[in-house]
Amino acid sequence: MGIQLKTIALTSDEILQELVTDTLPQILGESFELITNDLPFEGNHLLCLDADKHPAVVSYDGRDGGRALLAGLAVIEGLSDNRGMLYRLYPALFRGHPPGNGAGFRSEDLRLIVLAPLALPGMAYLKHAFPALTARTFRILEVDGNIGLLIEAPQHDAGDVAAGTDVPAPAAPFRGGVAEQPTLSAQEERYFADT
Image (cartoon, rainbow, N blue to C red; front, side):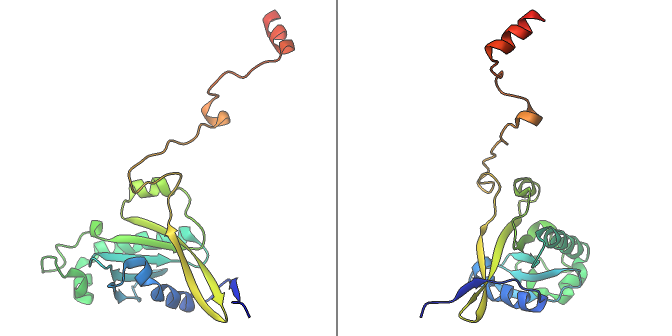
């Protein structure tokens, strides 16, 4: 008998958190460290150290990538505004940084990884505005009765933004004007020549 594989919809945040936690080695590298899955901010997020021991916030939502992005940005802002509390609660984040009230920890040190079932719109702009942002899509699969998360490659818009190659937007005739003059029929040319 063959393998039974199907995509499923998931409604439980607790199960989604477990699935995301199980896939952290794929997202952050094998030697990642989960600092906490219980941050005092709205939304679903994990605070981690990646394989290179850099801090990362993994923000996820089972339905809305925009909500995951906004929640992740709020976490980064909240952590940056409360570095002293962060230093006391999660000292593992500050290994390699100067000691003392989190003075060496900056919001620029935090990576934000957004996981959502659909791609974030405007990723090229977002990546340019916030280079530490990575967005990935996922699907929840059921394989022979077991569920798992399929994490897809990092999301980019119309070009490889990470490599710094900005791809110009295609010219839209309605908004950007027409690049070349439209051709007129012989009858139309006679009409406009007479007016």
